Amino acid sequence: MAALGWLTPRRRSATARSVLAGEASAEAARKSTQETQPAGEPVFPVLGDDRAAAFFDLDNTVMQGAALFHFGRGLYKRKFFETRDLVRFAWQQAWFRLAGIEDPEHMQEARDSALSIVKGHRVSELQSIGEEIYDEYMAERIWPGTRALAQAHLDAGQKVWLVTAAPVEIAQVIARRLGLTGALGTVAESVDGVYTGRLVGEPLHGPAKAEAVRALAAAEGLDLSRCAAYSDSHNDIPMLSLVGHPYAINPDSKLRKHARELEWRLRDYRTGRKAAKVGIPAAAGVGAVAGGTAAAIALHRRRR
Image (cartoon, rainbow, N blue to C red; front, side, top):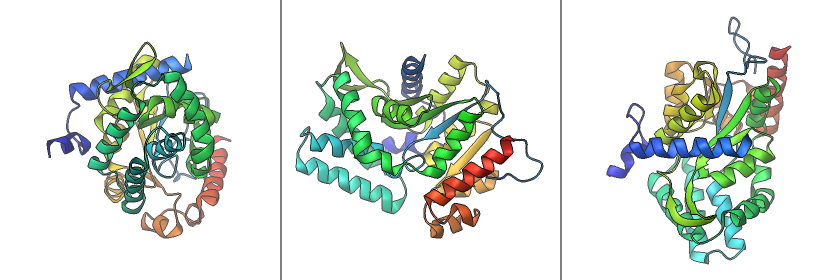
């Protein structure tokens, strides 16, 4: 299908809509904020390097599951839509968790459903509800290991941004709750503070993520060769390829293969069985808490 082209674009150049989506997300983000390494590698992250930053994908990288699904659950609880819509959201989430990949058709359906649901509602209303939904469904699903990696960048004096296809308002709530700098997310059009049911550009996915990071780096005066990016999905290879320090976190099979070929760093905070597939240290594979502790200790030692 033609729609799949921009979802699997390792080398494909960004479309005009990708650029628009990326620039819109970067602008929204700016407005909202005004393990032991092999011997011989430089200390990372570098303390006090204000031209470096870190960019973290959200779904299955920072948080277990998809933020849009959890947001949908919260809206259903508040009677924004009917039971059949929740069943569809649940099926999409089940596929995401079992297959470990993002299905383009499911993402399209989720996007269209979300836009129809929020049309006519005020942006401020969704922001307030997002705070509640984070406490109800998302807070307990944050991977401690990835959270420790983000904290290492913050401790080094660097900015840390979420980069996600989830609505920017929800992404900003999550970033704020985690103490991060801000978030890049999909921007839904609004007029006078009311959602129109349309997007600005396209969902922040694939090449659009890379364009958002590029636009934000230019606006913030960052050197991308000194920045880091973290993701679980091969769809984010364009974003990971932009920076000098790419990490594959809880990677899908395609990203794991690509990361090994390019000798990118790998981290897995899922079960020990999945961790073994990528050959990471056992301490990071025995569970999210143990992995987070190991990462925090290793990163602390490197900064000393």
